[in-house]
Length: 177
Length: 165
Image (cartoon, rainbow over the protein chains, first blue to last red):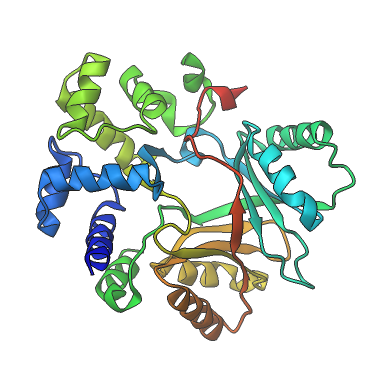
């Protein structure tokens, strides 16, 4: 019971903070005020969420595109299942790789099981970096495809909310776009 | 640090030094004291009001999307990467509809037969499947769902300098 209570209270806090901290002198107090929580409790719970890894990073969230990193390619690889973890860990360490995930294949349409994202200022910069990856990790025999982004329709942080509760927000968001 | 200013044709050519520091140095380990902006200000030897104003400007020009948390995928809910092969003439229309869904955060056109890629996030697996089905029903186009099985990357934020060649 206590756990369920905790979970719900954290959920409330997560919903209140996922759009970002207000830019006021006491932002945690302001967040708390909205959800009936003291400033100290907001801070305590956020520290806990950071420690437990639910929040992996807390700070300024930068938009790559606006900073001139306009080219981004999703590179997808069809790696034998027994090799995917080792290769994923290796690729994830390259500075140019901003995301590296193993995903489910979707056969027959989609045989690729390892996804990494490479950002660059232009297409050539991204392709050069990909060449480096292929060379340094001996990947020339691994089937892969490069999917450059052509247009970004939407980019923002994830919003976690129960569907039943979402309608007013949905109406608000749809009204805005 | 100066190289951040040298990127051609980007919005941040007009960034001042304070804004650059805010972008570079505060992507993680943000202060959890009651007055985080005052803490940053004292770090950078400026006033709290200057920090808040600079962040407001970065936010308004959409150089930053927010100051706040990035959640580890699947830690408080579930998500999937979804792809659709949308006929070219319908792409703008379908993309606009997908973007309007509150469960969708990233939504990109990519160069591939599967040309629309988006991330769907929900609190439960059931809700997630409901969103995917709703999209299929409303568009008449199959949605390929590629859930994440494992993450190999630790997100330390985006290093403007070292990515800058």
